[in-house]
Amino acid sequence: MAKEKKKLRIGIIGTGGIAHSHLDAYVRLKDEIELVGGSDIVKGKARKFFDNAGLTEVKAFDNNADLLALELDGVSVCTYNTTHAECTIAAIEAGANVLCEKPMSVTLDDAIKMYNVAKQHKKILTIGFQPRYDPNMDLVRDIVGSGVLGEVYYIQTGGGRRRGIPGGTFIKKELSGVGALADIGCYSLDMVLSAIKYPKPLTVSAYASDKFGKNPKYFNDSKNFTVDDFSVALIRLEGNIALDFRMSWAMHMDSMGDTMFFGTDAGLKIKPAGVGTGWGGAWDGTIGPIFMYSDVQGQLCETSVPLRQPSNDRFYNKVKAFCDAITEGKPAPIPTIESVYNQAIVDGIYRSSQLGKEVDIVLPNL
Image (cartoon, rainbow, N blue to C red; front, side, top):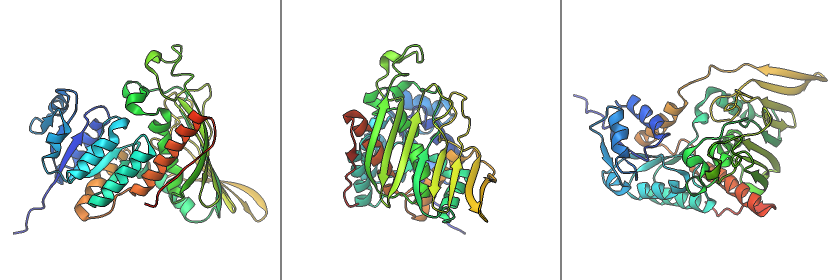
């Protein structure tokens, strides 16, 4: 008789909004995992979270230590940004692999600590960039990775929401650390950097503002708004590549433009989905039309690239990839070093915008 496959023991730290998507994915994976427990520092919140899902048998705690004592194989960290590092490090040191929600952390220093702890304990640490699992994001990476563009020397990340400021923990610096930059900006960075194999960032010159979030005319909780709602930056990358970053939660414009890759043999333009619809236009899901620009027989050509069938399973596929990596002994589905580079840019944009000048990105040998 075949031996029954051991299920992964999974826990969830933080049972707020995004944790529901993790929970839904784990429930779908019930044949492969056992959802053992969850924790939240708000008394009774974790218990209510599981009870509302009909999971009354799942253990609930008001602190992380009791959860992490359950000898878990994997943990989803779904807390607010400023606690990503401490919760991730605690979970890894307790013996668990970690799927941490984006952004990786708030500062580069914290991201490096997370990376080093995961490396020291030989555990998986992957960050929740679910757009990676969209078929058309794959298409962009496939096109750029094929070499058809030649040498890529300039990239623009466009998109941005016309009016899409979230509430709650997203708008408070003591909880989120940064605003639109970390919420959806990290997605646009991952989109383009993953397509060019994440070269090391070198310098950043940035500007950020909060002109809509602090204005009660545009946001009804303006008195509590303490983060950015708009940011732009020029980032220099290894390989003599310039990255023009743009992101917004709110603006008087339909879009901050398309995402574009400029190459020596061809160019690629990716239009954002849902432009001008308020919350649309960010690179947090799927994408809009794709066009390639090149010379053919001396003629300037524009080619529409057929899109692949979109998927609504991005979040599930993210969680499944994490579980599969644990079960199969594979490395992090999204390499941890790539998330460190992503965080290095977010950190650099924040520092540069605060200082009003260009800053260097200093990375240790990792």
